[in-house]
Length: 393
Image 1 (cartoon, rainbow, N blue to C red):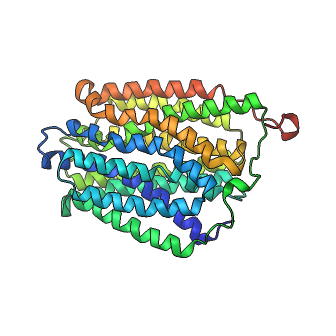
Image 2 (image 1 turned 90 degrees about the vertical axis):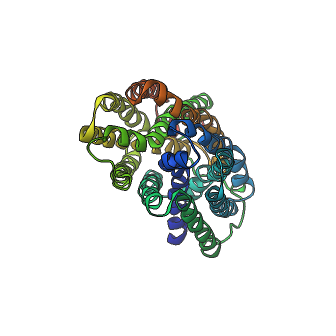
C-alpha cells in the first residue's frame, strides 16, 4: 500500500490533469476576443490537439509506466504539464496556442494509464479507491470552471494558464521528495486481477470497455467543454457575470463529483454490468430535458446530466482492476485510452462548428443518442462468475 502522502499527491494529480485540459474551454470567449475572432466557436477547433494527444499519448505512456516505472512517469507528468501551461500563457496567436495546448495534452496523457494503476497497486477496495480518485479528478474540473473564471476577470486569460502551471511545478517537486522510488518495474510484478474470465470473455470485455469508453468520452468532452458556453447562453437575461457563472458551473461539477464516490462503493459490492447499464439508460431522458430547458431549469438539468456522466467514469478503470493483472495494467489502459480518447477527441474539434450550425438544443439531442449507444454496448459485457467457474485467461 502507498503511504497517505503518495495517495494524496496521486489524487491531486488527477485534479490537475482535468483542470489543465479545461482551462482553454472555459476562457475561450475571452481568448477569441483577444486574438480578433468574432465568435468563440471559430477558435474552439484550435484546442483539439490537446485531446488528440490526450488519447494517443496514452499508448507510449502506459508502456513506459509498466516497463520503466510509474513513479518516474508521474514526475514527467507534473513538470511537463506545468511547463506546457506556462508556454500557453506566453502565446501570441491561435496557432502558437494550439501547439502549446497539444503539449499540455501530451503530458496530461500520462496520468490515466500510469497514475491510476499506481494508485490501485495493493488497494483492498479498488472500487472505493477509484471513486475517491474520480472525485478528485472532477473537482479539478470544478476548480477549472471557478478559478479560470475568476482569473480571467481579475488578471486576464494568461494568468488562468500561468497560475496552474506554477502549481504543477511545485507539486512535481513535492512528489519527487515525498514519494520513494520503485524497487522494480511493474512489469516484473504479478497479481491483482480479482475476476477470471475465459480468453474469449476477456477479449469481449476489452472491446466493450473500449467502445463504451469512447461513447462515454464523447459525452464527457462535449459537456465539459461546452457547459460554460451553454450556461452563458441559456442564462442570458437571468445572469451575465462570467465569474458568477463560473462559480455556478463549479458547483455543478463539485456536486456531480460525489457520484463517483457512491458508484465506486457500489462497484465493490455488485456486478459491473447492471450498474453501468442503469446509469447509461438514465442519461437519455436527462439529456432530452436539458435540450429544451432554459434558466434555472437548465441548471437543474445540467446538474443531473453531469451526475450521470461523472457516475459512469469509474467503470472502465474498475474493469481493468478486476480483469487485468497489475503487471500490464498501464499498457492495457494505454491501448484502451488511445483508441477511445482518440475517437472522443473529435468531439472537441466538432463542438464549435456543431453549436454554430445546429445550436445547443440539437447537440444535446445527439448526445442522448450517444448515451443509447453506450447502453447497447454495455449489454455485451460478460457475466461475472466465481473464479473456479471460469477458465483463466
